[in-house]
Image (cartoon, rainbow, N blue to C red; front, side, top):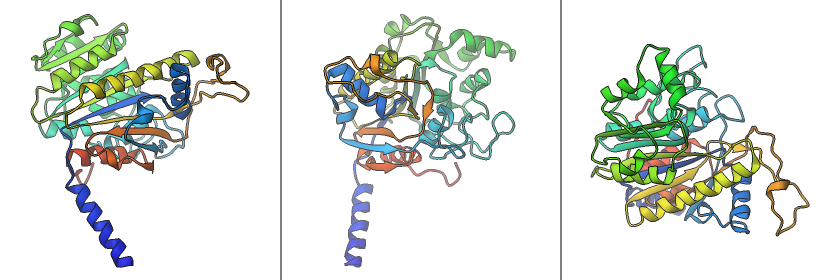
Length: 358
C-alpha cells in the first residue's frame, strides 16, 4: 500500500509539472484585507455572505502572514514574502532576514517581477497609494528601511534585471519629489532618462500611448484604478512573451465604512480584470499582505446596516488571510499555506525554477 501511495504521489507530481503554464500573472494585493474585512464587504455590498468574486474563485486557501521575527507583519515583510518566497523583518524591502532595519543591508532577494524582467517579459506595478510605499516598492527595490521612499523609488531608474517595469502608476507625487530633491536628484528628469513617458495627470491615463516603451504616472490625487489597470494590461500585452502585473488596493483606511467599501471596489476590480483576461493563459491571484482589526460584534441582526456596529482600533492583526486564484497553476492554492508559497505558485505557473540563492 505504501508503495502504491508513493507511486500515485509521483504520478500526480508529474501530471502537475506537465500541466498548462501561465503566459501572464496578475497579482492583486488588498492591503489589510483580512477575513473580517472580506466577510463584511460581502454583507455590506450584496446583503449576503460569500457573494464577493474572490470568494467564488476556483481555488481558495488561507495564508500565514508572520514575519521572520514577529507574529504580526507590516506590509514590507508581508509583500517581500509573497514576491520573493523569503520571510524578512518588518520594515525591510526585499532583503533577507540578515538585514537590520535602518542599520544594515541584508541579502538582496530576487522578486517575481525581476525574474520576469530577466526573462524578457513585460512588468507593471500599480497602487492606489504612494508608489514608493512598501507594497509596490518590494516588487522593484531593495532597501533596509521602508521609510526611505526617495531612495527606494529611484531604484526604478537603475533596475537590477532587464529594463525595469514598463508601467508604474500610483500616488505620492509631492512627497517623492521632495524626497528625491533632498538627494540632489530631479525625479522627473531621472524617470525620463530611464525611458519613461510621464503621465502628468490622471486624465492622461485615458489617452496614454500603449506603444510607448515605458509609462510612469505618479499622481497627487486619486485616479481611476480600473482605467489604469486596463491601460497596464493593454500596454503589457504587447509583449508576446507575456507579463507580470501587481495591483495594490489599500483597504485598511482607519474607518470601517471606507475600509469595507474599498474592499467591495477591489473585488469588483478583480472581477473586471478576470473578465477582461478570459480565454488567455493568465494566472490571477488575489490576496493580502496582512489582516486588519475590523470586527463585527455579536447582536447585529440580518437586515441591519452592519457598518455602524463594526469595531475598529486601527492596527494590523496576525491571523491568516485569503488567497484566491484562477487560471494556469491556480490548483496549487488550497488549504493553509505560508505566504512564501504564493511566490512558489507564481514561479511554478510560469514554469520557472528559482535561483539557488535569492
